[in-house]
Amino acid sequence: MTSLLKKEAQPKNRPEEEHEPAKEAVFRTEGLNLWYGKKQALFSVDLEQKEKEVTAVIGPSGCGKSTYIKALNRMVEMNPEVKITGRISYRGEDIHSRRFPVEELRTRVGMVFQKPNPFPKSVFENVAYGPKIHGIRDKKLLEEIVEESLRGAAIWDEVKDRLQENAFGLSGGQQQRLCIARCLAVEPDVILMDEPTSALDPKSTLKVEDLVRELKDKYSIMIVTHNMQQAARISDRTAFFLNGEVVECDNTDKIFSTPADKRTEDYITGRFG
Ligand SMILES: Nc1ncnc2c1ncn2[C@@H]1O[C@H](COP(=O)(O)OP(=O)(O)OP(=O)(O)O)[C@@H](O)[C@H]1O
Image (tube, rainbow, N blue to C red; front, side, top):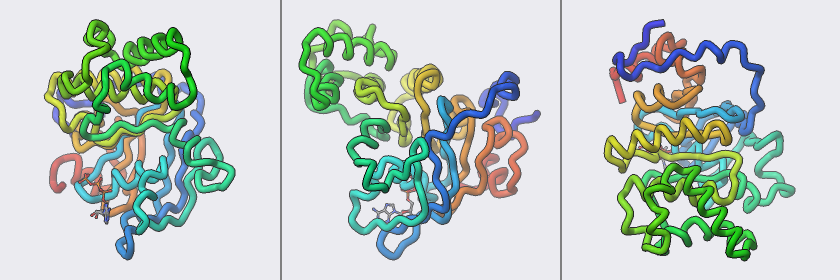
């Protein structure tokens, strides 16, 4: 198939996918509408995040990408003006059900933001913070968790001799991988990433992209990105948002070669946005 993107950004062929069994949906949204006060930002969004896949969320500025992923961990509801209708389920359970405490949801669903946001603490304490909150006090166990998480985030070799230094002394790219390590330390099931490389230089961006590809063996990942080459490089599925609606969601190869909707084609070929 011919990609509509430039050659270097073309997604790799993944013929093995055709023979894989159907994967479970970790998140499913059905008829999701969301308002900020009177302004509607999401319109009847039906979308799934499949187990151990990377879903890229793309679309022009203001189309609702961040709003959507922040709805999944209920962070968007910290704004008292927000009103939601429709259903969001996590592994079959309605996330708004009283039986599903928001703290539990946020433990299962980690988030990485646009700008790295380490705490003003040591590298070690940044990663140990979450496990400590969850009651882990044993020093040896904490050390193991910190090492494993830093290794998981592909930053251990760079910081193993600087664990007691302040995290603000790390480069931006290292800080972002530290934030990913902090997220891994509480053993999430899903990782939501909101433009995690937009504040990084190209080299750090590639490191985080490599990391995302590695992490999907263990985690289900949804990543908002403005960078379509990035979406093509790292995701299995791509959802194209426009004006608060999902225009289409399909295998990334398909979206970037033969999208079903003309608006998707116009967006990925750079005709707008
Ligand atoms: N706190 C808020 N109060 C009111 N409106 C908001 C708020 N946050 C977002 N919006 C509106 O909701 C719509 C979707 O915004 P959102 O930030 O989700 O888009 P986005 O696709 O992530 O944009 P970008 O790519 O620029 O980050 C926009 O029209 C935006 O102005």
